[in-house]
Amino acid sequence: MRLVIQRVSEASVAVEGKTIGQIGKGYLVMWGAKEGDTEKEADYLANKLCKLRVFEDENEKMNLGLKDVDGGLLIISQFTLYAGCKKGNRPNFIQAMAPAQSEPLYEYFLEQCRKEIPVVEKGEFGADMAVSLVNDGPVTILMDTEEML
Image 1 (cartoon, rainbow, N blue to C red):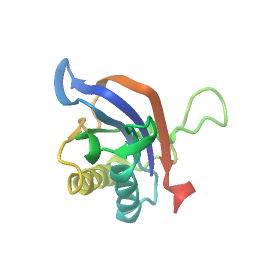
Image 2 (cartoon, rainbow, N blue to C red):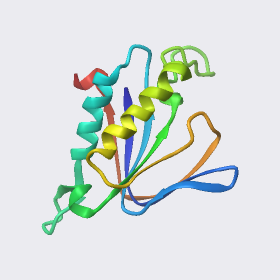
Image 3 (cartoon, rainbow, N blue to C red):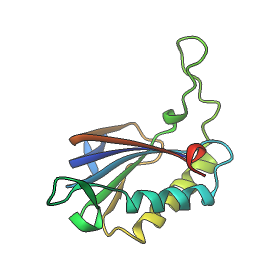
């Protein structure tokens, strides 16, 4: 499982011109699952994400988490996080989990985050989405269970 986390001052997602999710201060998270990922990986990354401390404290140190700053999460499913680009110029998505398995795992991940963070917004699974954000910092963090578990 892979997350691309961006610290934002605001972010939103729209489908067909209609905003379906938005947050103020918090994290915009691109979420992707690969074949073989389970609730174990989802639990691990949800825990790490909800406890991540990349907001500045009074000493300008990245020491505060979402709960400390009343931040929210906007979590977007993105199978392209597992694009394979080794051969040729057109990516393949062989490693990406099939939608039938990925969507329930995405919903499970959202629920785990909602246990810790009051504001958790989402995109529309499988839809063509327009994602807007104001990256604060910029701060972008990559989390991947292959490197962490």
